[in-house]
Image 1 (cartoon, rainbow, N blue to C red):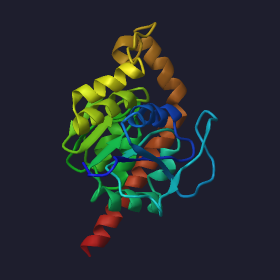
Image 2 (image 1 turned 60 degrees about the vertical axis):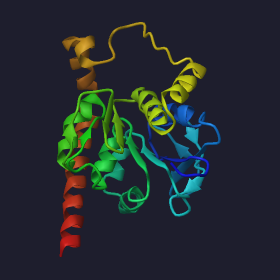
Image 3 (image 1 turned 30 degrees about the vertical axis):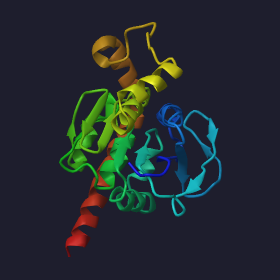
Image 4 (image 1 turned 180 degrees about the vertical axis):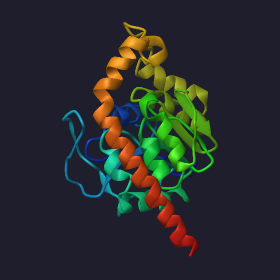
Length: 237
């Protein structure tokens, strides 16, 4: 950890799933003296995939040194998988950032930036198989830790991931204080938060509704993996 106040950078982009972003934000912003930066190409308002508008606090070009760089997920990640500006930023900053994190399908963006090769990684269950396209080993866990890489399952898992990062940085008692302060004590009304718990019928229904999105994501992953291969070939040449 740096000797200065901890500096956390969260990527903000159009069509982000806001809870992928705001769940970890709520945890990280409660770290004493923390500086939490919402990073995007411009400072213009960014609309989430459900219509919530969020303001970036710094541009990618002006981002300060970071102890943590976190990428949330959402429908907008498809475009990021071949976005050279974003991928270059992530790849360059990863070298000087102590911890990396991908929440939900944000893990795929880290993969497209070449940061998951040979790593264990998690993501939303419906997109988990896509991780292999970027050289990662998919893991069906809510929080997956591989060295300095923290990834997680879908949406609400971002809170769990952020608490684990706080525990890694400052110790378990600090993470527990934050967990208690936000009363994170989930007891969902239904046991349907995973395909195994929800059962085949509910899972099949949801997958049918998600099919257009998943087909588009499959195409985006293929394009992202091919673009990564070309960049690596170019570096070798």
